[in-house]
Length: 265
Image (cartoon, rainbow, N blue to C red; front, side, top):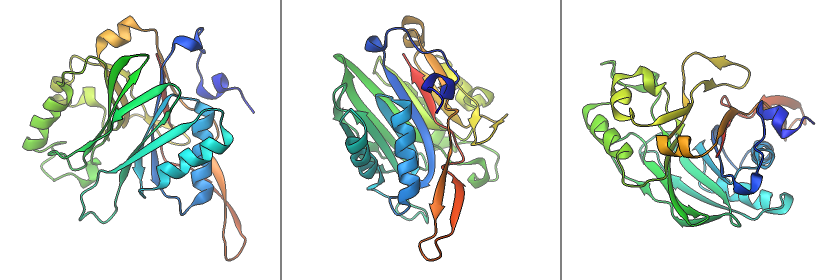
């Protein structure tokens, strides 16, 4: 198997004892009912070896805990998980946001899913790393195809609250997730996050990169300038073998239609 450095297409940092790593990944309707896919996701997370993982588009409330349980039997670190429903209750496809973290490195304070004016709630993870209070917002905004026909990415109420989201008081603040757009190409986004660094912005599909930018990591500029960082797209295996329980037929499937983002500070 290729080394992690080769799989990530990156140069590893010199001092791993003084780095903080974060992964964001849309896992495309992950459920513990598909155990083969869940194991493939868990193995990818183990391979990424990040301190915190933010997952979007998790179909069931217990999938995150199942991943943590798997990692706790196969990985050297102890993991915890939290899951919050972020989709509306009347939505046909219920969706959860999940955070996973290493207990030996990350001290979780709380992780509320905050009701707001967005279609999906924002799932926050407040924690300390080496004594530094830090906040991550896990986001999954609506796809353009599901937006109203007025052509706006956000309605008026959402625009106001988008500004509030990024003007919070936390000095160490990250926003990650599937934004379903490239923020800097949208006037509303550009105005709201003009004081943020955009660490990575290609759309990460399984076998190729598209021009439109869906998956994003945003961070306050002073973090990007004060800390050496690398941000990369995972280039390892993104497939798993599914065995039909009734027929025994084996089929190769993609884990997700997105690849993970990995950011190291």
